[in-house]
Each structure stands twice: as C-alpha cells, then as structure tokens.
Image (tube, rainbow, N blue to C red; front, side, top):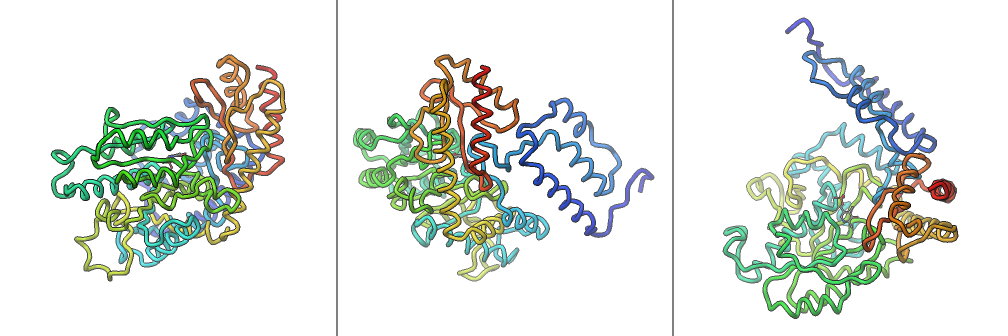
Length: 469
Ligand SMILES: *Cc1c(COP(=O)(O)O)cnc(C)c1O
C-alpha cells in the first residue's frame, strides 16, 4: 500500500450517518429562509468541487464535510415552499426518510430473489396507484426514473403491439421491413415525449401533429380528421394530461375513443396532470383516461417523492412485458406470481424506488393525496387572482390546474427582465417559457409544503420586481 493511501474503514460508522442526518436537517431547516436560487458562481463551485481526482483517498467523514460545504452555495432550494419553477415537487418527510433507507438497504429490484421486500413493496405501490387513479387493475406497472422513460416504455409497448396486430413480430424481426407506423401527437406535445419517440425509432418527419385549442388541449375533431385521412396503418396516438405550461388536459375519453375507433393505440403523457384523478374536485379534467392503453406518470413531481421516481403503466400487461421483460432467462429464480421489477422497465439493475413512493402514499393516504393536489391548485388560483389584479401583470392561461402563465407588458424584453429579476431576488424562483409565440413566466405549485403566506410573499416579490422592470 503506498504511504499516502488512507486505509478504508472496515464498516460504515454510525457517526457518519448521524452527521449526515445533522447536515440534512440543517439544510431542510434553512430552506424557508435562504435565497431560493443558487448563490455561488460556476467558477466558485469548480474551485470547491472540481479539479483532478487526487491519487490518495480520504476518510468518509472528511469527504462528506467537503461535499456538503462545497455544494451548499450551489444548491437550489427546490424542495422548499417557494420554488415554482418547471413542475417540481419536494420530498414528503416519510418519502425522504424511506429514500435514505433505500440507499442503506441498497436493494436491486431486477429479480424477485434479489429483494423480496422491494418486489412486494413495488407490487403494493403498483396496486395503490392503479386504484387511486382508477386505471385498469392488472395493468403492467414499471418503476422508472421519470415520466420521459415512463412514456418511452409505453411507446415501446405500443410499437410492439400495433405491429403484432398487423402481423409483424418486431421482437423477432425489428422494425425495418415491417409496416410503417403512424404516430400522432397534439400540437402542445411535451419535448420529452418527442425524445421518447426518437428513442423508440420514430423520426420527426414521421410524426403528425393535431391542432389544439387556446389552452393547449387537443381538438378531438381535428384528431378524427387526421386519423380518417390516413388509411389503416398501425397507429399510435399520444395524448396529454396536464400541459406543462397551462395545465390543460386533452379530452382524454374522446381521444381514446377516436383512437380506438381507428384501431390505434392511445398513450397518455400524464406526468403531473394524471394525479388530478386522485382529487374528487379535479378528476373530471382527466375523465376517460382509463380508456387509454398506456400512461406515463411522475412520482417526483406531484407525489412529492425525492428524485427519481415515476410509473410506466400499460393496460395490456403482456404487451408491456413483451416490450421490456428481461427475466425470461432467469425465470427459474421466482415463482409465477412473484414480481421481478426488471420486467416492466427498460433497465435491468436498478434502485428500489418503490420504498419512497410506498412511504409517500402510506403517509398521505387516499384523502391526503386528494388534499395535496387540491390545495396546490387552490394556491395556483390564488396566485393568479392576486397577480391578475395588479397593474401590468397578465395571466395568459385558463388556470385549470396548478400552472399559471404570466406576462408583463407587450414587449418580450420586459417579461425577460422580470424573470431574471425574480430569480436574482431569491424570495421565490420561477422560470421562463414561450406561450403562443410570446415569452412568459411560468408558476407551478406542486410542493406539499407551500402555504398561502408563501404565495402572498412571492406575489409581493414578483410585483416589486415587475414595478422596477
Ligand atoms: C415533466 C414532464 C415530463 C418529463 O418528466 P421527467 O420526470 O422530467 O422525465 C413529461 N411530460 C410532461 C407533461 C411533464 O410535465
């Protein structure tokens, strides 16, 4: 052993874990009052955390102190109550704690035998989610890292199944040489769904777009026209529950029915919006979604589990498993009714994500999920009401869910200045977007810990920045 080499401890010292608990508690305790934005420059972060890998190792406690101190000024208070950027959930206490245990347990959920506990927890969470969102019981459910991969998984199942129905076995022969597949999306399709399509082998020029209404929801008559015009090739229709800017829902029941009348598969990107089905006062927005064939759903947005977690759901569990199943070669390892997590995701080895979602759902209960979603939407409406009453601020969307689009004056440059000013001010954080060709600022209320005073304080800060801009 070279002299500079630090000897590795023989086991994990509980003091290390206690110190990490202390650092985490300090961080979480400060979220409410620290600036929401990161304060360090990129160069400062590189100076603290970058450089070449040293030859000699260091003791775990020293490594952790260095990481915590170096990262702190570059962290964003995104799990805190006044982060309204993108669509961002925080971490429910039980979910965060379960996620720590997940790392300590370090289970691989590819095969049942690798972790019976992780498998049963995944199976339980899958059942809870199908029940809560009233999606077909018995659907395949894969625990993936995000809605992008969730939709990608749905698209893989869709691709295989529409070809199979057309008499083409793509598992055996691939896609080339098979019948061409039509892919239809709404005009307001999320960029990540286009990525999923690209990964599934569909090029931009192959994708047909259906017109949407002013709030970004697909027009069913336009979908009918598009499908009727195209003959009877195998077809995949991609709908959306919760447009990322406006929160709008495609009319999912109509879209699914029209797709099916044309023999098409209907996939729903429901990253955050599908959770509306868990809330009695909002469920009507996603009515009929259960008639689709596959769904992508995030856990790390509205369910407020730590990154990363999402659900890939496919009504036809056989089609799902044909697309992503990997365990056939290992079948002797588990009995027929024992779930192997690897069968439902485009991964093999993977983190036991089910524990955090199990804890989130168990701590909220059915009524708690409904209350969380409804409370966030009420706070979004409150923000919209306060802002639209102020001179100079304009709400651009119909606030149907938790998303609010704001604009300041006629000139894009003013809205740009407000976005930059709000981010620099640090009271809250909102990002920019483009809505119907114009710059807008987007406010998303998706965090379990956001309160009405947080909304009022944020609106005040936004209006002060806007007045100066
Ligand atoms: C966030 C989002 C996605 C992508 O989800 P990830 O978890 O980031 O992969 C897809 N669709 C919509 C509508 C979203 O809001």
